Length: 314
Image (cartoon, rainbow, N blue to C red; front, side):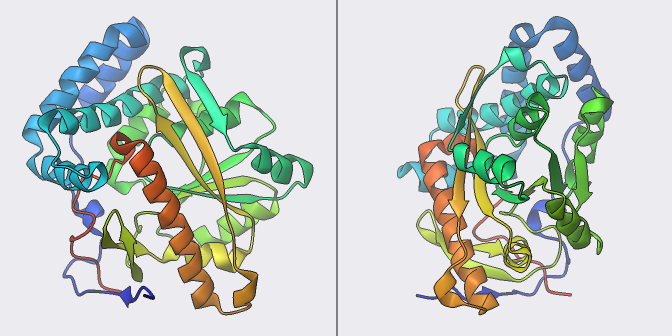
């Protein structure tokens, strides 16, 4: 059955995830950052476990969203231990960003998988590549790989508003490691993305959430249709550059796997842009579901992804 575009009415023009208030205080984030860098990763991991437990106990809406997602993904009712493991994985990736941004790569076992085609197209052909990720695992490991291998130039198109405290605190750790960020939600973002790709850069974008009012497609995901924003895929089709699904899966301890999977425009669809968008979205969601099932505690959308009211189009 062909997915249908939906734009349910909503009073607030922002997506549900942007209407959530950022949790935590700036002084606590800065304190945890200082402790992490001063005492080291091993010594501060127990603090991460306590923070995860506190978040799980106090964040009722996030806890309910975690239970809903995990029950779908695991195929059974999620237990309390599952919810804690989910939140702890999220807290661990935030904690590890402190060290990755500070170029302490030796602390981690980063395993790239499926990167050969990316290397061939980017290095050999000199083409810009569009990397479509999700709030799945850690995007920071991709940025770490790019810095560790100086020949890779990475720009990140992202929306900063709902986690500004975290981004500002982490950016202060190592200003030299600050990525080339293309702020989404601004009119010039599309032109900037196009320019970076023309320069032969990698451009990464998380495509499972919208950064503002958008058209959505209801696509089957973990057993039930869920709304996915069309904007990132409309941009991908319009630009016509090679596209990859990418994710940095946290595997526990200090281990991450960086996966790349090619997504293709369908030559049989020709210039039918809307059909190309739908086909590309179906490929993306299929890969997202695949990796969610393979590493279920890595998906960090702590809101009702399936049933939250969507913003109206402007």
